[in-house]
Length: 324
Ligand code: MLT
Image (cartoon, rainbow, N blue to C red; front, side):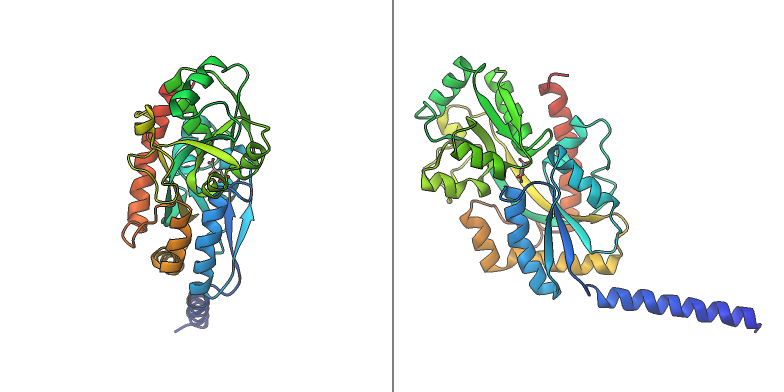
């Protein structure tokens, strides 16, 4: 064997050795989980609860990085372009991986092609919440008031394409109203302004409003699911309240950039499944109204299928409902 050939073989063996040592060592430093909204909103809350348990399994801290802007698409674009080594992952949701493609013609990522699905973290029913002195005693009165006062009301949301935006777009199209919409960098700051009475109402995911509703700092007019939530048993469903067509639940899920090595993905997926099946983590999410998947529901296959179907559904729905 020539000297050159021996040198090439030795080099290849060395590279293979390094690659496998890297995979074996994963993770050997903190993992960044990008949350594409401000702190205090549903995406952030779910990421912190799930991320904390994933850190325990992985033996490394999962650091939450809030990268807000453009309805969550700024942070998710950053995640899509991150080095695919497992050290940058993201908490995406029904907006970033479903609806955004229908609202941003130049979206910086393809929700179906630019990610490796890790798994679903939680489902989150939508609740219509308003400032505590909103002049309506129930959903019927809320709808009538919005219809009669649409020019003077402000509905807050987390940016174009966010869950709070697209779900209020649906609500407004059902009520046939044109209400002023105020974008925030997340529903955390939007709910702060709702508590302060600076905006009138929000269509938010239950996990970031249930404590405020229970505390009486905001009021809830309806939960958009067929059954009431055990977390807010006194809040009627939109079916009970007289708006049965308003049925919508969001979802939040973990993604890695496309090309993340399979053995690294396997460790991240194992950590996510351990998190969502852990009784303590489940309880924290369920107490807030989250609907937590089982191991099968949190599988990458289930998430890939969810992204495919939600992407198709929302792009079609928004085409029909949003003024172009
Ligand atoms: C939304 O899409 O409305 C969000 O989930 C906002 C957030 O997490 O702050």
